[in-house]
Amino acid sequence: MTKVLIIEDEKLASDRLTRLLSEVISDLEIVGFCDSVKSSVEFLNKELKPDLIISDIQLGDGTSFDVFEQVSVSCPVIFTTAYDEYAIQAFKINSIDYLLKPINKDDLEKSVIKFQALNRKNNLDIQRLLPLFEKEKKIFKKRFVVAIGEKLVFINSVDIAYFCSLEKLSFIVDKQGIYYAMDQSLDKIETLIDPELFFRVSRQYIVSSESIDKILLLSKSRIKLVLKPPTKNEVLVSIVRTHSFRVWLDK
Image (cartoon, rainbow, N blue to C red; front, side, top):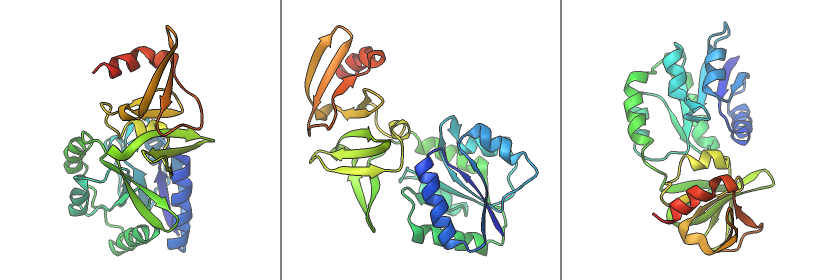
């Protein structure tokens, strides 16, 4: 059996990865799911050791590099991330594969074939990767890749009006009013975008400054936004974010 550990803090992404793995690894055994640095360290300190780790880089309480600094890992690691610039070649040079979200089945299959060809030899050089990742994470996303049927589509950040959460799903809404479903939660998206251009006004909305059509003062601490293109729900700035929102507007 090929024992695989999945480190991923997004349930939808984890479920999708599990399904794709079952299609490309005939003797697959998922030995665990971890959604944080803490749970990953705890798992890897146990007796059971995976043959392969597939890990998102950005986790809710840190990065997967924080995991590998605390635990000695003796199996190959395939990294997944929403970042799409600068570090790709670095990961390749270090013989660690890198998959851009949303993960494509063909790319995953190639990574698995590479893992099998390595004959379970570990090529993880965390000390070399850390400074490269530190450089990468300062770069905000310039575009997102979304799946539409069997196609992957690029959405440039400058063309995004806002991000929203509807019925437990996350969406990009472009300036034409087209909705694109995302694997990431708004919490994750918030860490990837330029805070100079986007602001998290509530649990349901992250807006760009250019998408704000009207600002209505309902009270001293309550603000309503009218966005363009129009939203499906009323957009109120969270009371706890009102002051920060005013500061952001005034930059």
